[in-house]
Length: 280
Ligand code: SAM
Image (tube, rainbow, N blue to C red):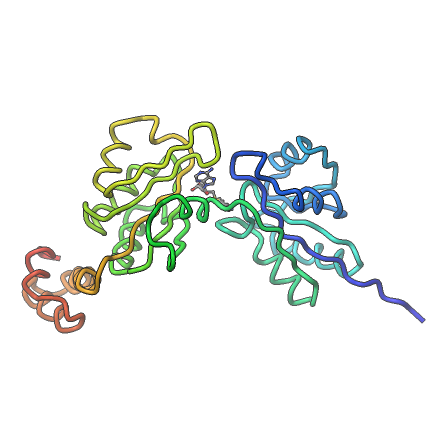
């Protein structure tokens, strides 16, 4: 008679987004208890783990090897080992790899358990002072300008608060594109280097924040979360949606026809679409 080992657990462990003191006691206890740790960047996580005196085998988890690694991980879990998965910073799977591993573990009937902690998006939202009852996490915008502008244009009528991740290379460009898509006066918050030495949380309008970032090199350094208030009331959302439809139709039709059709489709005022949408 063969006895089957009970399967292990896959722990999804959040790590700090800057301040090492944000690693929770349970995260540390879990990392100490598992057989091995899957990490996005083994060198980076190795440093964090050695800081906390955790000495465990590390398995490299990249976007391109996730499917292959998932099978190895599932086999080990089914054999009774418990494993942890961490990313470079914050909560794994939030703009980070890991979901294929989690999906494979769940499909194999293995227990997947979260050890929650820091997440830059939630940390930024918690200090932004913008409506937080409904929000949409948009992660990173596309790197290419045309795709980025199109994505933002599609979000212009979104009434939920929007949360974006951004790097120092593109923060100025992205703020400029947000101004163009959402309007200069849209309230927003720029959360930079949260929990780190140069933590800065700036609030104002998109135009004001863009000007600050353009004027001060320091405000372009580090890691950013941009939190943008959603399109205000129904009329504003309707106008934003009208402008979006008008811009698409304007690529194929004369401006007046595009404005008339966009007004019919969305209910936005035709004159405002014509005046603000230009030739589309
Ligand atoms: N999984 C992480 C989390 O839970 O927040 C996010 C990983 S994503 C690859 C990295 C991005 O998160 C950065 O480019 C930046 O937009 C944001 N981020 C991470 N740490 C941050 C911090 N300390 N302050 C502001 N933004 C941060």
